[in-house]
Image 1 (cartoon, rainbow, N blue to C red):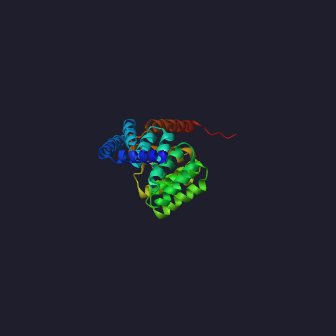
Image 2 (spheres, one colour):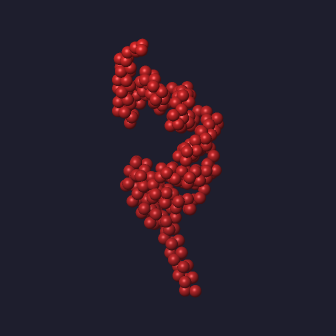
Image 3 (spheres, helix red, strand yellow):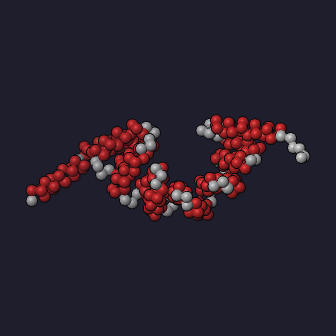
Length: 258
């Protein structure tokens, strides 16, 4: 009987502490600050405010979710997953939580767990194409290429203007060393959007690996024209110089009849 009274008292204390207007207001202020810092890409700074929010209210799903995104962005994926699972228990019908779990599991090389969570995300929100793309990536990581192709094809058939599906399909062909099919997909992207710079880079890589250096250089230059501040700028310029040197070497080779 004493134990029952004690448990009731503790539950009441927890209820009062969470619903206390002053504490609720403070938690909202802290959460707002945390979200603002995260949106400003100050991920490490936001973590402390999320933790303070959770200290006041351990049932705050938004705080756990926001904290998970901050952890994910600084590379602490295990902590992100832990926070996401806590948020999932509090709000089990939030598709975004399962989606973020899928991303994190893919990053830590557990695509099997990613697939399970992404399927739940898609079940809750069938119209979100990002969920489906991430599922395709999961199957790629599991070397289930046919599944990935079928997902990308399904998206393309249902949403022909969704260029990301073409891009992932083309990249998968590229990784499988099927350069003709890859370049064909990249050309399809350019028909839909002539300024899609990644398509130019993809086509350049295809021609490069097929040994057509003149065309490769042309498409590398088109890529640089559209994306002059690319993170790839130095490696692309370097590759162009290498290909020019190869072309000169090939011109210098004299054919002789034996």
